[in-house]
Every structure is written in C-alpha cells, then in structure tokens.
Amino acid sequence: MSSEIETVVSPSAVRLLIVDDDLAICRQLASGLATAGYQVVTANDADGAIAQAAQTPPDLAIVDLGLPGVGGFDVIRHLKKQLGTSIHIITLTGADDEGSRADAFESGTDDYVLKPIGLSEIKRRVSAALRNQRAFVELRLEKEAAERRLVYGQEASALLAHDLNNGLSVSLSNLSYLLEVIQGDTDTTEALAITLRSVRRMSGLVANFVDIARFEDAAVKPMVMRTKVHALLQSVIEVNSSSITKGAKLEIDCPETLEGRFDGGLVERVLHNLFGNATRYCNANGRIVLGAKRWIEGEDGSVEIWVTNTGPQIPENVRANLFGKYSKGKGGKRGMGLYFCRLVADAHGGQIECEARPDGPCFVLRLPGRA
Image (cartoon, rainbow, N blue to C red; front, side, top):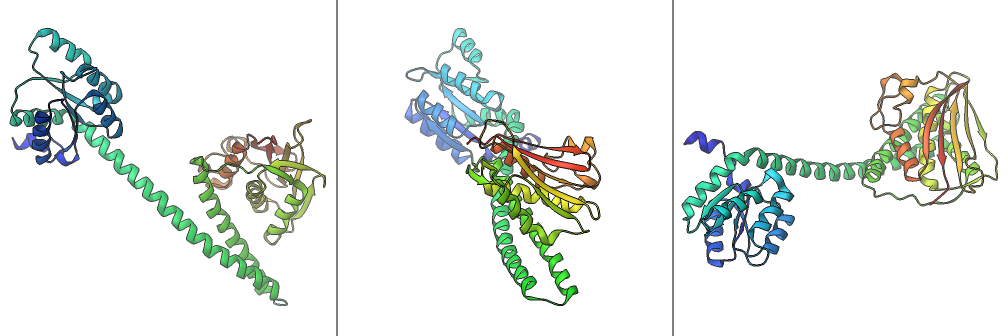
C-alpha cells in the first residue's frame, strides 16, 4: 500500500472537473473530493464543462453521460480533442448496456462506472487514475513553475535594467562634464575619456537588453518618419568621437540632401553598435567610413547605410551567423548588439548583412522606407 501511495502526486496539485446535471450528486462528489485535497470545479451541462476546461484545463474529469443538450459523449470527445492523453476521464452512467459502453470508450473515456456508486469507490478510481496520469500532472506543474520563473525573471530584469540605466545616465553626464572642464592634465583627461567610453558602452548594452526583450514580445513598432541621413551619421560620429583610438580617421560618404523614412532613434542605436565594432577592430592609423545612398531607385524613402573599417576580415563562416542571438563574433566573443541590429532591420521590413570589402569588413543596413 505504501508503495502505491508514493507513486501518486499530491491531491492538492490535481485539477478535477465534475460534470453532472444532478445537483445533489455533483455537490456530494465535489465535497468529498475537495475534502480529500483535490482542486475541484463543477459544471451541470456541456457548455459549462467546456468553458471550465478552456479556462483551467483539468487533469481528470468525471462526466455523467446523461447531460441535457448535446450530452456527455460530446463533452468527452471535446475534452479528449483539447487535452489528449493528459486528461483521464471517468464516465458515470446508469446505462448498463454494451452499446453505451462501446460509444463511451469510442468517444475517449478511460473508465466506465455505473450508478449508483459510493464516494469511497469514486475516490479509489480517482487515485488509481492518477497513478497513470502522474507524469502528465508533474509535467504540467513543471511547466507552470517555469512560466512563473520566467515572469519573475522578466520583471526582475526590467527593474534591474531601469536602475542600471538611471545610474549610467548620471555617470555619463558627470563624466562628460568633467572631460569638458578639466584641461591641461593629459593623463587625467585620457583616463576620463577611457572611462566615458566604457560607461557609454555599458549604457548601450543595457539599452540593447531592454529593447531586445520588447522586440521579442512584439511591443516595439518603429516610428517611421522622414529623417536627414547625413545629419544622423554626423551625430553618431560626434557622440562617439572620444572612442576613436589608434589614430583612425573618420569619413562620411553621404549626400547632404539624402533623406530616408525610418525610425531615427532605433537606426541611430544600430549605427552606434556598428560604429563601436568598427572602432574596436579598425587597424592602427586606419579608416572608418559611415556612408549612405538611395537603396531602391524610385523609392523615395529607401536608404542603404553602411559602416566599414580597414582591418582584418571577418571569416565567412562567422559572418553567416553574426546576427543571431548570442552568436560569437571575432575572438569568440558573444554579444547582443548585432542581434539588436537585426531586430531593428526586421521591424522595418529591411535587411542587414556583413560584406567583405577590399579594405575590410562592411556592415550594410538596407531600409525600404515604407511604414
């Protein structure tokens, strides 16, 4: 007996649906099984049973065949179609004939019980059924626990990102101010510039993290509007000018009159990510170019924007997976920046890729200019 008890999950974890149009029987079964610890819900007709199952899928159901309207057979078929083998169905009936038995089992019932039946016998049937359903109940409990952990993790991550972003914003503001007012001490200004670059990169990582989660939840829709592309590229260079190292030269290759239709804030974030990669991998005394041109002739708002740097090429096998989530870049480093860039391109109905140009790698963002 003890080994049998050990194989059954706790009744408090089990959802049990009782469907019977006889209110007295329904109350008696519900009271007895709830007292035994089961999570019991009841219904007195087919529509109520189907609604209850849709709202909270049960692990086990006790269904009376003699329901008004469509009847118990249809309830059984519906439950089995909805939940498959994850639900065990016990049929209650006063019909002791071969045809009713055959119809019940053909509909999907797992057990056939004749009325009248005592509460103790029903409890034994339920306990026996749950020995077979243990794996399904445990799987449901594990799934529900995982969903709770996911929600908690998302909420905790959002709060953490918010607090980090606030702190980093203050640090960026103060560091920028100090870099402006401190003059003459080269070592100090250089140290501040290095710190400012690091904090700015951390701020970008936090922003990427937050926006990636929002993109994946389909909570971000680009605010497409006409944008002056040359001014945007100039802004990216100005913001990142302190990050230039190794004597790299900066160029803009873009008509001053070029305009595109896209979300300027999101695309600027993409360019900050791409520009950051270019500064890290540009060779000594090399060149970084931000360029843009019309992508599709006749499409007034379409643009092709690129960021390229002189230096070593990215291997072809790495380029193929460069924009995936947690993909490895040069040196085997993992990051989310390029994944964020791909999400922005996808949200605009555009594309992004890395090409091998004669002087080095080139990241190309193509936006169709349509809302």
